[in-house]
Structures are given as structure tokens and as C-alpha cells.
Length: 316
Image (cartoon, rainbow, N blue to C red; front, side, top):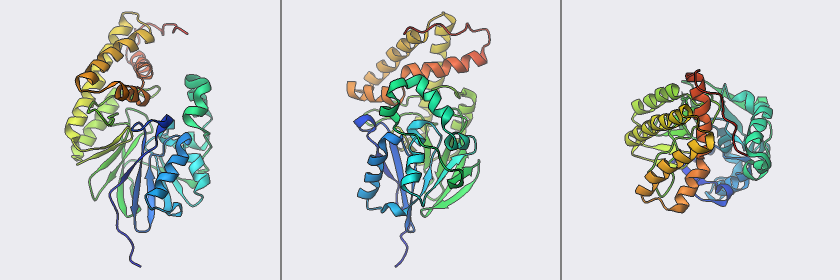
């Protein structure tokens, strides 16, 4: 029987916390095998595997698991999936690999933020066997599921962030480096959590994506976007506008809650101007929370401006 050629990627809605259009995974198929790009949290594994099967792809064909970075909403499912798919291998940037082999620090950091909500949000996070990893570097070329994929190192959101460019279509799987853009609104929102936010590195990554003139991005939050030049320009503007909002608040001695409230007011005003209803605004907050974004900026700005005051004591 002739081998099937590559097909267009399928967007899988992981229905994070039972909400549509917040976290996506992407399925690539071709030549009798399949690959998943970004895996979501362990809490949505059953949804992911059911969607793969419903798409007509036997699980035994899923041999490649690619993650753009190791944050739990993108790679939290990695250990569980490798247990469920013992024939599959995981592909991750070299700076992220140690955190998946031993997720102790990853779990501890998330637990400090989410506390008792850890299990509900992220599920059971299992270590990844080192012998099941393919460690990636910039410029590496992969051939899987009938697709030729170039690995692009795209830091800024995270030190361990890569994007995956399909050489045949020119389309790029951008993880979080191309921001958050959810169904129901065109607003491109920066996800800027600690600890790795670096706006200069992010600018360079956006320059790199812009130079490739991709006909489409596959954005993990959420789906396929085709107006890529305008998308990147808007993200770049919001990244620098938010920097000024947070910097002004910090210089005024405001605490994180106050700065986040200002950012939320400005951001929600723009969402409303674009006809985003309350449900859409709620999903944006799930995908990229204002308080978490402010925390990322605070850490970044204190490194950039050593004269800034130490962190204010946050209200309980």
C-alpha cells in the first residue's frame, strides 16, 4: 500500500478546565506516522488522545512528541504521554531537557504559584526518561510524519523556547513566542510570566519570525493565524507598552496587585473595543493572567534597572 503524504496540521482543542479555545495541541500526519506539537498539561491527556483517535490516527502511529518549551501548559503531559505511548520520543530544546528529566524544580516553582490547585490545573507530572529524549538545537532539521521541520531557537518568553517551521508549507508552530490570540477576538496578548522574560531577546525572535514571511502561525493559545505581519507588529507593540505600564507602576511604588489592575483595565478596554465579550475576556485571562504577566515584568525590570525598589509585600 502506498504511503500517505503529509496532511495539513490539525488543531486539537484540549478544553483546558473544560473551556474551549484556550490551549491547543497540533497533530501532523504523513507517511504512516504522526507527530504532536505541544502537548498541553497532564490534566488534558485523555482529551488529547481521544481527539487523535477521533481524527482517524491510531495511537501506535504517534511516534514524535514535540514541545516548544517546558512550561506546564505545553509540556506538562510529556511524562504521562511517554508512558502511554512507549514507542514515542520527545523532542525538546537542550535548555529545557533537564527540567523534563527531573521536573522537581519545575513542580516546586509551579506549586509556589498555584498551591492546592496544582492537581486540578496540571495533573500528574511525571519525569521523562532521558533515553526517550531528542535534544534540539537551533538550526536542526527533522524529518517526521512526512514533514520537513526546521528548529528555530526563539527565546524571549522562555530561555528554552523553540519554534518549528514546516519547510514545505512555510507555516510555523510558534508556541508562546507569537503571543496569545484566542477565538472570538483578534487581540494579540503577550504572555510574560517569570522567570525568563527578556524583551530584547523576544524582539530578536520576532525579527526572525517576521523575516521568514510565514503564511500562517500555529499558536498554542489558540489555533491558526494567517495575518502574520500584523500579528507580530501588534505583539511587539503590546510587549513594549506593557513594559512602560509596569515600569511606571514600580517607579511609583505600586504593588503587583495595583499594577495588574491597571494593566487589566487597559487590556480589557482594548478587548471590548474589539467586541470581545465577557466569556472571551475570561479565556484570555486563563491563557495569560495579568498578575502573572506583571510578575514576569517585575523580575525582568529589576535586572534591567537595579535602582528600582525591592519587591513590595503583596497582599494575601
